[in-house]
Structures are given as C-alpha cells and as structure tokens.
Length: 126
Image 1 (cartoon, rainbow, N blue to C red):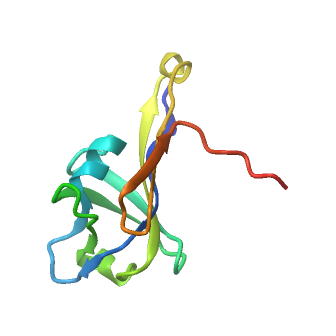
Image 2: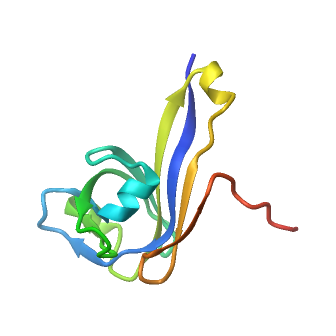
C-alpha cells in the first residue's frame, strides 16, 4: 500500500506571467525546480492564495534565477500576474519509505528568490 505525501512545496511564490495562448503548464524558475526537486513535466498542484483557485498542471523549466512563475494555457484563467500561489508536488510512498521521509519546503521573497528551505512546517501558536 502507498500513502500519498507532500513531496515538495514552493511557498507563496508570486505569479509573474499568465499566458493564455501558450500550450499549457506552469513555467518555474530553474533554480526553484532544482531546489524543490520538482522535475520538468511533473504533475503539480497550484493553490492560489489570492483568489482561492486550486488546479492541476505540470511544470516546465524557466530560466535559472529569473524568478519566473508563468501560469499558461487554460490555467491562465485561474492565476494572474501578482497573484500569490503555493505550488506542490506529491509522491506515493511505501510504509517503509514513510519512516524516514521528509518533504522539501522552499520559501521565497517577493521576487521569488529563495530565502530558505526546510523539511518541517512550523507550528503556529493559537
């Protein structure tokens, strides 16, 4: 049996482009892809903090250190430049793999430059 777990998260990245006429996908700065472990053409989930939209697409590589987050094709109806989003990828793990698994969490600044990474989500005080 496999359990679906959060593999990686790009937390609060800002959409820089929205290209309706593009074939599809989400172009992501190559450094963000490499740091997060998201592979080109991997399925991703996007959660739009700005408007509440949630949708599935796949990742493609944008130029390294460009800060580009471009939501393309039909998904361009669900995110606009300036929107803040979370990009996640998930993985199916066996019970044995779960014992040592930790996700990769990537945090960015307002220009989508990496500020830090973690493998745990901080607990918020009530």
